[in-house]
Length: 400
Image (cartoon, rainbow, N blue to C red; front, side, top):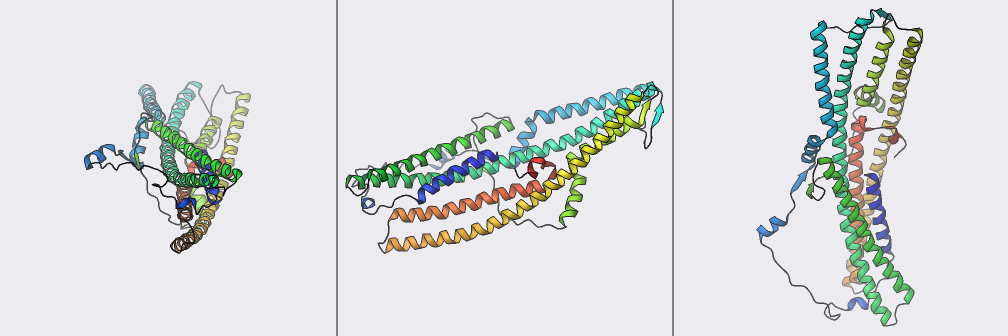
C-alpha cells in the first residue's frame, strides 16, 4: 500500500514541479475560445432520478470491514480449527474422564500412556489458545488493511484531481506556446519543453488512475467482491494531536502485556516448559537435552521479540511527533500559498499578470492543502498502528 501511495506522491511532485517552471504567456492568452475557433459543447441537464441512477453506492469503512471478515478464508479456517479441537478434547475426556493440567515448576516423570493422554489434551488446549489469539490478530489485520485501503483511495483521489488541474494548465501553456512560436515570440526549444511538460502531466494522470484501479481491485478482493465493483468511499479524517496519558516507558510495559504477537510467544514458552518438565518414563537423555534446548530457544525468542517490539514502539512514537512538526510546517506553507494567490488576483485586476498565473497560484494553494491531507492520512494511520502494537513488527523499527 505504501508503495502505491509513494508512487502517486512522486507523480504529483513531478507534475507540480513542471507546473511551477512553465513559461507564462500574456499575448497568446488574450485569444478567446471564439477567436481560436473552439466550439463549446451544449449543456445537458439531467433529472434528479437520472443523477441518482449514475451515483455510485456508498461504502463506509465499517461496512467494508464486515464484508472482509465474512469473506476471510483465514478466519473461517481458525473457526474450523477451534471446532475440531473442542470435539477432540471432548472425545478424549469422554474416554478417560476430565483431566486437570499439572502445574510444573520441576521435572515430573509419569507413566508413558498417561503422559500421552495428558500431553495430547495439553497441546490441544494450547492450540485453542493460539487459535483464539490468531483470530484476534486476523481481525486486527483486516481492520488495518481496510483502513489503509480507504486512506490510500482518498489520498490518491485527491492527488488525481490536483494532477488533472495541473494537466489543464500545462496544456493551456503549450497551446499558448504554439501561438507564440508561430508569431516568432518563442524558440523551438522552449516550445518543445512546454510540449514535454504537457505530455508528462497527462502521463501522471494515467499513473495515478492505474494506481487507484489497483487499490480498488485489492480492496474488492479483500471483501470477496467483483474486481469491477466501485463505490463512493466514505472516509473522513481530521487532524487530532495524539496525547499520551502516561510516560512512554509505562505505555511500552502495558502494551507488551496486551500485545497479541507477544502472547503467542509466551504460549510457546509455556508449551516448551511443559514438554521439558512433564515427561514419560521412557524419555531418554537425548530427548531431555533437546527439550531443554527448545525451552531456552523459546525464552530467547520471546526476549528478542520484546526488545524489537519496544524499539518499534519508540520509533513509531518519534514518527508521530515528526508528522506533527510536518503538519505545523505545512500550515505555514498554506498561509504563504494563499498570500501568493491573493497577490496574483490583485495583479490580474491591475492588468499586470495573466489568468494562467492566477490559476497556477490557485493550484499552489490546492497543492499545499493536498500535502496537508496526505500528512493527516499518514498521521491517522500511524497513530492507529501505535495504539495497536500487535501490528508493529521489525520492519517498523527500521522506519519502513
